[in-house]
Image 1 (cartoon, one colour):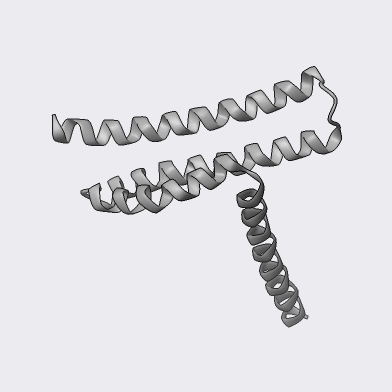
Image 2: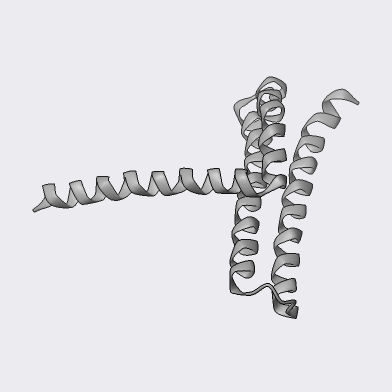
Length: 124
């Protein structure tokens, strides 16, 4: 019986991974902001590994940027859901989209703050 559960669990894990890849692809295909963040990642992630003087600094640099991308994915999911419900203007729909946008802004602000707090003392 436990072998059956392992197979089902492994199958579920593989399917979940596939759904995640579909989510990345959909966000990349439909969201210009996510495409920009992916392109910036090509430079930001290696730069974070290079500028980080320790594992903690590297984790802060790269992790803060990955957090931006996570929040962008969630914001895109909120926007897609709101758009699916209806295209007419509704105060709550606008509020949901604005709050999602604000969360992306805070994530980007956090990433900038992390980079500044680590790098400015080193180079000033």
